[in-house]
Image (cartoon, rainbow, N blue to C red; front, side, top):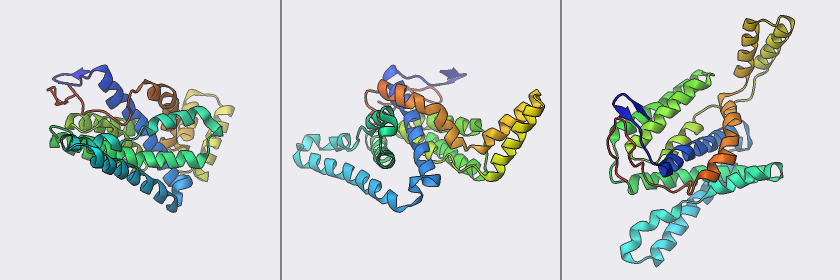
Length: 271
């Protein structure tokens, strides 16, 4: 992928681990943000258990590894802290309604804690080089997501373009792209449809029924779209892909190296 002198080049393995899995963690972030805003996690006491479980689930394997590993292999402690919760979440999606809602929310929250720390360790501890300029660009994109969320921007494309910039900048920095996906998902707002928006949408739909003209139909479509949060609209589109395609295509969702050959502008990256 190239635009002028700038480009992005990766082999298939990195497109899966740094591209497709970033989308997977983006959806995980979306789900957790929705549960924090309008779901089971609005009661913050329910967040404590998965956070503690995620931290313990990384500390205990790392300590056990350091106890039994020879001194020349001690630096490999970061390998054991990541868990493949993505595969379990994909399996739960296949089970569907038979799966406990509380179990899924617990695993989603656990995934956020576990994978955010795990991929941060991979990116910070095991990377040969971290480029600060792309890191600053990614941080600017994260800040932009916060701002447009606060302003109540409802158009999906605004969030997606910024999320893509954050993803590319994270790749170019040498950090694992899953960090970008998860953070972007957590920052896309979710809310319950307000009665005012729902009634306004219904009014425009009735107007279209009485006068089926293109401009009236577009107005009704816009009103219906605005009544549903960007978060839930994105989940509706991306869930089938993440649950049934991406998880199946990934050899290791929480493991992976920094991007090889990914750059902005074009230059080689350490693997």
